Length: 403
Image (cartoon, rainbow, N blue to C red; front, side, top):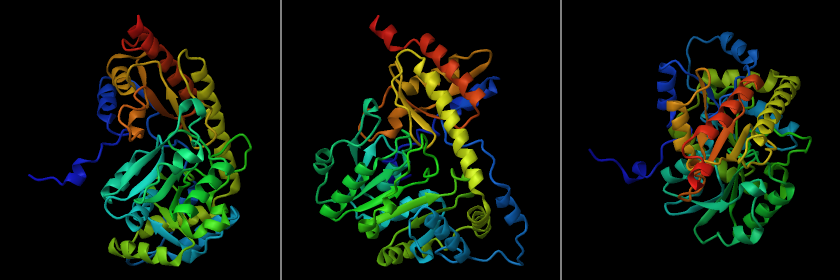
């Protein structure tokens, strides 16, 4: 049977495609520490469940395509706490941040158009672009430089007449890098110079560490009509399965175009929106401060353990809950599969996400790994010890190859 060229061009998720190997390991009795996926073990606030349990209606009806008015009002209030002036009418509720990204790309790009994205990047960005028949043009970054943006000239030279937008994840998935105000101003200048949109994926906004204030593209008032804000409750409130996100922009024409697509998919789940409204309205700042403090401690635990492993290269992440590290191995995907199939300590092994899946350029990131510090500190310490021992025993470690 026929499959479209579009679907055949898409890659499988680097985060999920190795799950069968972990399933097989578990079936053989191994315990697997999952550092491969950003699924927090933090408890979802109880107000979410209480709101859904107390919801009373004779019929679960369609909600407004733009989202429940009370949810958009609550999201607007959240943004104002961050000094980002989005009104309810500037906001469209979406099926997670993923749909918000997909809608943004569909509104902005024609077939053959280009989106610049710092590399490595969240693998699904490539999927969102390719399904709109657009193309990702990677902006190169390096582990040795903390995955920060290159000089403005490097980015400028990548812009062509087909460039329509620059997309950034800030704080970044997979690297944990947080953009500096100078980097954001550079992007703002390029967006104005070439009449581009800036897509700001800020789902990890609450997770920055070391007391540096977070700067959002939404804080730059001279470009608000071209900043497409993407957000989600998934990581902020540990509600990944709720699938509630939003797209926001101070541009009425853009919102009108997005609404055409929102109307075509009818609406977002009414019950999930009820729960999300409660999260925005009733979750305390103390909850967010406690969660931030816990992730900071987990970051410190894992980073310190990695720094004690010979041959690993990584920078201390300033945000999100990921570390992107270079390993002294020939190929991180082969290494992860080998660990799941052949290595354990007292019946326990660990799993990360292969770094190459976060690159568009072939053969980049082959010996890199993304580790999500979403487990408790004891589990992270055990996982790091397993990683150290596995690197030492792995037949494809770089020292063994050179020998």
